[in-house]
Length: 422
Image (tube, rainbow, N blue to C red; front, side, top):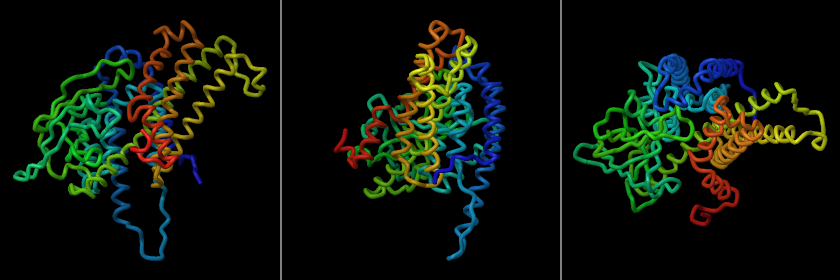
């Protein structure tokens, strides 16, 4: 049975994040929307101390689980349930309520860390993620999209060739629209997880993911995008030119036989099962911010939402707000369900795509309706409503577009392969 009840310790963490969102993110939200590519490093340094402590605790728990093992035969150990994904979606939704661009920019392993958690070996998780519990602020990122390969990952041209003389992988190619690519690749001791093909003739089955650490020769940040929304978050173009990385920086098994290559791509795809609920959660936070603002401004004009009246007795504005809240709740429940399944190691590819597709659709509609309901005030830069409208649309695009996620949902429900249903 799904239990969305959070332990007291996690509730306290969420409350702390709400204080950060309300008192630190929201006051500078407009400023860093307009000062694109500038970073509030004082805030990030403070957030980094929290991140380090949380990561150190997570590493300690992982080591303890590995040391304890599963117990002797016939003996069952009482184990504390894993709530990492559930904690993550609540934290992200809370911070995105303050400002989604800033929440995407907070130091941490990010999508790159999620890829390592999904597809990496225990040794790789220890080696690459331990750095996020020590030292100066660091960022992680994931690079997938190319100019000719967006939703169709089989078209990826970035390639990795094994130099057997040095036992190194040599990467060549260009990645675009990489979230936090600048901070991960140039401004810290972080890393970028790069999707590349080891066998172009194999299509998707030839795709592997590689960890490229900041400062690696041949790895450069070539461009920063100027964007419609999430402007406090950097989006970069990354170039790899004869970029040499260690043999064991390939995530998962280093074997590249036909069977292992197919399994490697499945491991790569597992990343989305963990990250799509997180992206959905960021949309949930933006939608909640818009809803709260609309209700507050309506209340200032003496318009209260009557929850105890039948629909036909409500005003058009009240019906709109109730519909917005219902759609928000549906998306939030789907997101928590996908996170809960991930925590309990239940395959959640369908549910992750459902959460991502629903949240992307809902946040776009809610923020658009918020602008409409508030009229000129919603359109004015005096308030953040128009900014949330701009921030919302990316939720329908990155981590798999609305159309791609709907295709995945249809395939899973109908039992079709990608070749049968395009």
